Image (cartoon, rainbow, N blue to C red; front, side, top):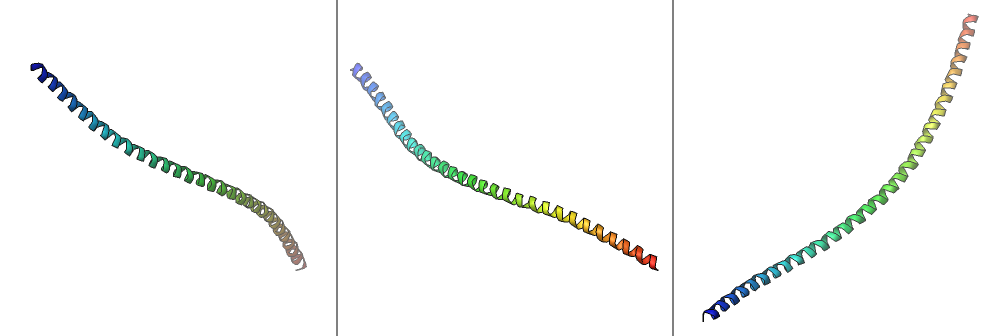
Amino acid sequence: MHRAEFENEGLTNVRERLTRLETLIAAEQVNLGKLEQQKSTTEREIADSEKVLDDLKTELAELQETLEEKNKIVDQVKKTALKSSKVLDQALKEIALCVSDDTATQLRHN
């Protein structure tokens, strides 16, 4: 009878251990399900972020192209302004010479 009690106690311990393991497995399956949901959510967020990043890269490239075009226009305007400034300076010099000549002529006549 002693042996039967010992075997019964051993069986009870095995059942308790089995119950704990089954509970642990169930909890881990729940955790696994949550992790799989988080993984799916994170993958969607990454995909969305990559799409936004691609859109921003495209927009940046377009803006860069626009900037380059506008810089070319600015450079042309600068060149035109420089040429105009040179022409204006030359015209002012010629006017100054004419005024000086006229003044000198008037002073001689007086």
